Image 1 (cartoon, rainbow, N blue to C red):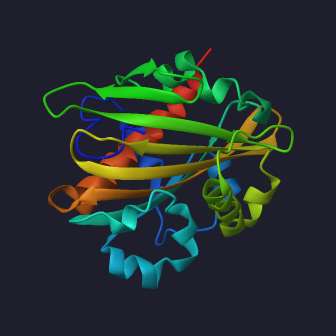
Image 2 (image 1 turned 120 degrees about the vertical axis):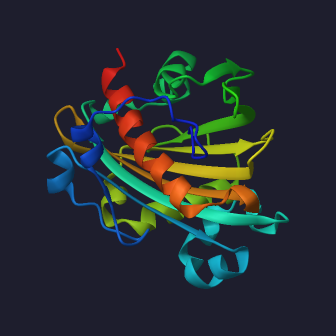
Image 3 (image 1 turned 180 degrees about the horizontal axis):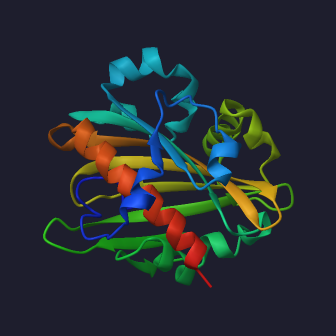
Length: 239
């Protein structure tokens, strides 16, 4: 969730790893598990006005649980990423996905303070730093902490977008709000899909309202490219 805007400039990623991050032509790309098992990371990102979003991404409308499309002077940033981590699908349960230690690890230099079972304050350090509030919820066949019908529809729709997501063992839903700058609000839905023993496909959808001045597609794409490789590595390295 260190999304965009030079938040990851200080991350050091090898040329080989960086080359494995492959941009796809459309946010609706189909996850290629064969390529992902070889170590590739796939992503796509688009920046559009709220009006264009309605026409171009009507199938993603249910992800807008925060009514971000109604925010003034913003552009909508829609993204999707897919990668396979060296963790069993059962690792991504309702405990680990909201565990302060795990979240602090996978968010890199960001610092997390837990307010309640599902709520956190996140501080991004540095000269361009800022803070925001994050709420995280969990869904599986056995347990669900999804708070309302809007969120349930968002998770359901995210699963409909990819056939493979319908075999997910669990899903996390996150709301990011109360940004001190750069963003207005955002939503992320992540599905965790068992592929092989100790291999899980992580499929992420994000919808963010970004203040127009900062909604620079080339910058956002480069930042996302760096971030998703880093996040994959951080999940793999968590003990």
